[in-house]
Image (cartoon, rainbow, N blue to C red; front, side):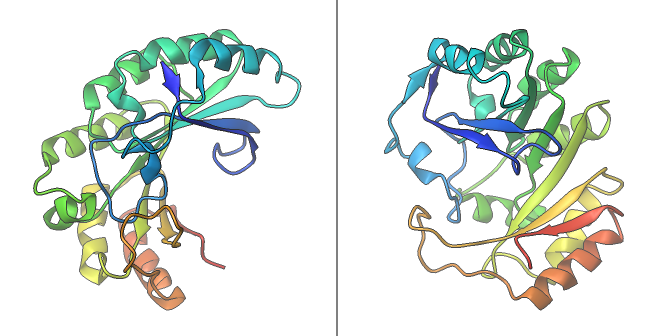
Length: 230
């Protein structure tokens, strides 16, 4: 497997674990607010293969304890479980980021106990899901299945939504709340613009809106928090 990026150390990506973050290319979605679109459109070229990654991890054992795997969409890669096994064989904990569109891969990884933590994106309410993903249609059954798999697993997890002013409104968080009612953790992340974002006319919600949305979500997920909001 080819890796398209690496952050050699972070305290932010893997809760409670000093880790590196690796980036895999490709994604099912074309979200207009994506920060990593160069991984989707092929602009970002591979920087190492998995053998080079393992060599890197062998050299970092006194500095980091975990590996966060993100993208793109890691679960597009059928050999993802094997990559995780190799990472774990070096003694590292693993966190997986996913859009939830490959529940069969997610379930296989969870059933084998390959990861300590999963972060799954919830893009929007169901009636606006495809729009928010930049697609004409989305198979919502796959999203519902992944939500169920995570909520019924013994693995620690979070759901998270990147909130964009042009794409989200109050009623969306009532509907999202119903989708993930009783979940362990839910984070609302405030959109921030970057040069790599593919669509240039998006903006962050106000702080007041973010707090309003969080209060709505707390009716359904008690442990709802904000990210990117000072």
